[in-house]
Amino acid sequence: MTPLNKDHIDSVLARAFELELESVVEALKKVKVASKVRFIMGNSNFLLDKVILVADAQYTKITGSRCQKLIDLRGKYQAKVKSAANM
Amino acid sequence: MEELILEEVQRDVFEQPKPTIDLDYLYSVKKQVQEFADDTNSQLKKNVYQNYSLFIESSREISALKDEMRQLNTLLEQQQTSMNKLLDQLNKTPIIQPTVERPKIDFRLEVNEETSEVEAEMLPSWFTKSPEDFDVLIAQRNLREAVELAQRVKSHLAQYPKCYENNQSDLKAKIECRLQELVSTICSELQPATDKSVQGGPRSSINSIKLLRELDLSSRAVKLYLDQRTSVMRFVLGQQKIETTTTLQFIKQLCSIFFHNVIETCNEFKQALEVDRSVNMALDECIDKLGIEINRQDSDQVLLFDTVRPIYFSQHPPADDRSPKTSNGNDISSHILSHHTEKMVENLSLLPGGQTSNVFYNLATYSSLTYWTVQEFENFIVLFRNHVFGNLQSSISMVAESIYYLRNQCTKMAMYCEIDVSMFIERNLSKEIIQIIEDSGRKLFDTVKQLDAEEQWQPQQFQNKAQLTRFFEEMNDVELKTMPSYIFEDLKLRFTACKTSFARCFLITVGDLAKVSLAHISHKNRSLVFTK
Image 1 (cartoon, rainbow over the protein chains, first blue to last red):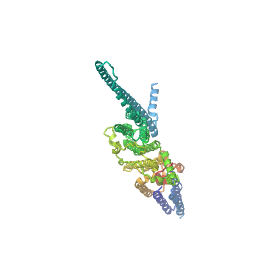
Image 2: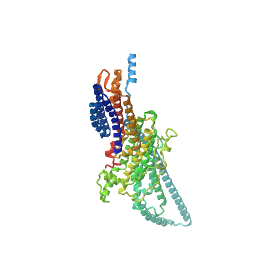
Image 3: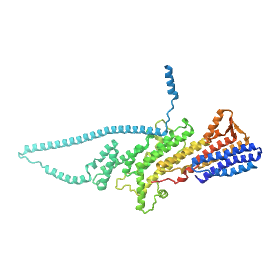
Image 4: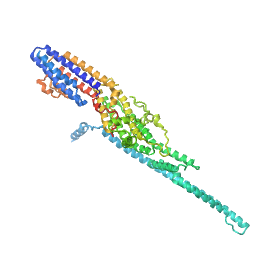
């Protein structure tokens, strides 16, 4: 893949996903009810453990290389979400 | 009973699955039909020329008979004159004298014998009769034997370069004229046909190319053949109609036709011009005679090929998105016979070693094929761009799928005929691809913002089982197959509707963008690949 092209695509995907994850973190910071926190955490896990992995597998299947920016995002936001939930 | 029959008929008519016809099957049927058409055509030609040949033979016999009659007539007249003279002398004197003319005749015969001995060696009868033989062979379309005769004439001229001296200019003109006629006849087989048979494959061209090669006219064979393939391909592509199918199916159809033709042309070209053998010979010559160190690795060979100019340069106008306009359904000659394919003047050299080959000549032949392939691909890209990006209604998924299909076809072609044109997609479509990436990104950001604004953090609730089933199907389409395990109450999901909508939208975009990416060609971006 042309580096510029791959970088462009990876950035677009990672930025969109990050925007979505940021809204989850913001919601966790605002919510105080434990059941609500668990529900939002469940949604967060769905995005981080399911959607990102399926996206990476699909991307790799078509292009032959992984979308590293999405994988990096997963590690970063797993910690961030946990921290926001504990606040 | 009637009801049973009616039921059976209904089942046959309405319930029988329609047979699926794939493109490969259609091509094989088309090929068979073409072969039958070629056979019939060839048989007809042979019959016509067989009759023509008999007619010419008869004419020759009649002509010979006429000459013999004339000679007989002359002899009889001479006899009559002699008899008259004898009678006159008998009337004058009783002694019968032998004819005084005889010694003179004998002397003339001796001179003729000496001359004919020399002439017979320099101008044997097969050589002097060769113009008539050429006529017969060309008329019979027995081009193989005609070429053999031409080669025999050529070697005779090499052995007796002065055989045309001594008032033989008429014979020289006749032989040269017949040879040009032979070349024109063979070339005409490579000209694009002026009717629907233009749609036939290139199989019938192989013999003509071989014959031209035997006459040391490889360059002309290369030019005519590749021009013919260009014309045929443009005609066939122009015949495709978008009205009958969806845009994506139409694009796939165009790609399939284009690559099928290119692969067929490459294989035919390599076979007819023995490219593999020639290239290996050329490489051997480079190593042995010129002392060039060639590692026979791809990279080295590419460098070597880069120094070789192709012997073919297309003069076809660049393709555009408009289909050729036909005056009627059949006659396409005005569209496919461009100015350079109508007439090509190139003299057939009868001198020995007329077209000397050198180490680069064989390489140049292959370069011509790669040059042609690239030219045609770039022209095809214009057509592809106009159909895929020129339509404002095209969805991003459709565009992505079209590019992906095009790229896969390039990979297939690289595998089948060792010419990789993938990099020309990047060169020609990079602007459009960047636009697609940006549009997809913008659309995705807008969706994320809108869904966040709507987020209520409530479990997604379905109204009924049908709605739930449809939801599972939609998620299955984007590879989220475990959704049923997240239903925790009757018709309730553990996630919000906004999150599942985002997941679906994001995964569709991932698929689209992965398809327009150029990852597939990174490891084989080796220019035009020459893997001998």
